[in-house]
Length: 277
Image (cartoon, rainbow, N blue to C red; front, side, top):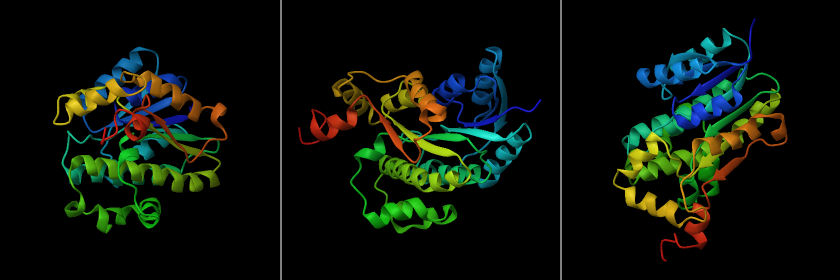
């Protein structure tokens, strides 16, 4: 018997927490570039009663994305997307961050949007980081939203020589993610489906641990210490938001980005995390 298919990218804690929250009874096609992480995550979920098919894929490659989509469609209509794949500023150089986090997400939202089933829903994981960068011009925001994916990295303000460092690249990628969600939700809506983003703050995951031990480690530790919540978040808390956005309870929500950072962004602009404080 065919099941509703759920495409999940990224075998990390946020993606798998969301898949565990909303993926029961569905065929979950779990994609990741790291085969060991992929097999481990799939085995843990399958041993807990889920139905997971691991699929080695590269978010920076359109052919790989299309191959994963084709695999998912072997099992049924694609009804759900959870996109949590990506790299952080401490994990990759500028070019890789832009190719994976920015271009790859744009391609994935576009390709899934071509086949998403009526009544379907998708969530992509962005970041608080895109909320703290200097504002772009309305024209730049529109270009991030609407430029054909294959032309995105040719935009002048996204060329590596115009990107200050890996954090700047990551911020631009996450700003682009949120603009693409707004753009693509219109096309998804034509198929009767919804698309949203979540912008987490500091969530305790292996990626976050890399950041804690990286060149900006003290900055991140200070961030969650001085945010209103006074702590980092957990993957399960992000899964709770995703559950709302994917379920019928979120039927009127599409094209939105939910900031979930314990108030760190608010503190950055109006509290003790202000750069001039």
